[in-house]
Length: 420
Image: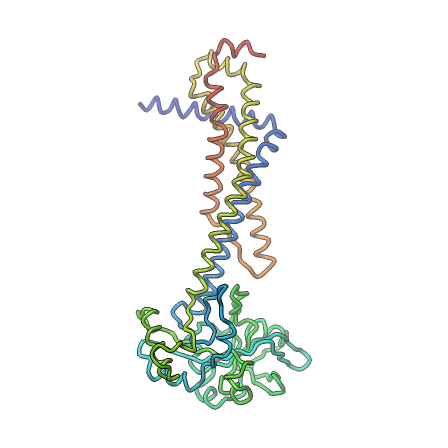
């Protein structure tokens, strides 16, 4: 039994050696025949890698928003063709008084905060200025709801938050723009003619696909914003963010918050609510469907390339059988079994496809490496996608090479030896 296994292994190794020699002697033909496989594997693995990387980046962005957070807003996040923006626009913004009510009555939450966003602002420090800065007015518990780290400095004190002090926390990118060569802590910046003292700089987060990175934001107490901007005006985008207590299902807290907000706004039973309760799943779920469509399209495009490549491999294998008919006859006359010839040509077809697949995977890796190091977006070629590429290459090699290999293994040795 062991002897038979060793014999089979030896014959397979000899088949691989024969296949390698045949491919080495026909380099140009090998390259041309693998081109279709290279393009097909490149298309499939590039799409899979891009989708996987996009999903990871979206997931990271969603988690930074807070997967255990409910956002009380006037705008619902379930966008669609029937999105009634004209109706939602007339809804009132959440207010500080409503935040206090939520804090008093909510029993399932761990923390809650009011966040007012003022976009497109200009912040200055001496001769340096930054445009398009998002200004976030936040109540005291913001750091308990939205997770972030400090590069330098500290968070607001409760007194600074309640009194509307002229203090600010800036993002890492904003700090680099305004303070390229000095420490920003305790320096004063100008926003709309008002001076704010910098007390903290957030850790670099990088670009976010959902646009919720703090890198280019300036955070100030919401009471400070309320001193010169009417929070319920169209200029401000306000929302109450409520973080669920540990172990509390988000749906349960959502029901509680709905009751609190309907009561606070004195809505009658059956009356349509004039607020939205949003959660990150409303963003993540539709995107999964989009990623699924992109992945399917990648397989279709790559599949056509693989089909063309497979026909190319099969054609080259038929030519290879024709050229080596005499050699096959000699091998059979010397005792080579049919399965030995079959394995020899199958291995050759598989190696052809693996070479093409390896080139395609290397191209994906090279592009991923370049993009990751050129822009602030991480693309990673995972081991799973590499194995997918290798598996697809082997399968295409088996399918494309089987009929030529079968034909070669069934040749009559006498007729084959006489072939020219």
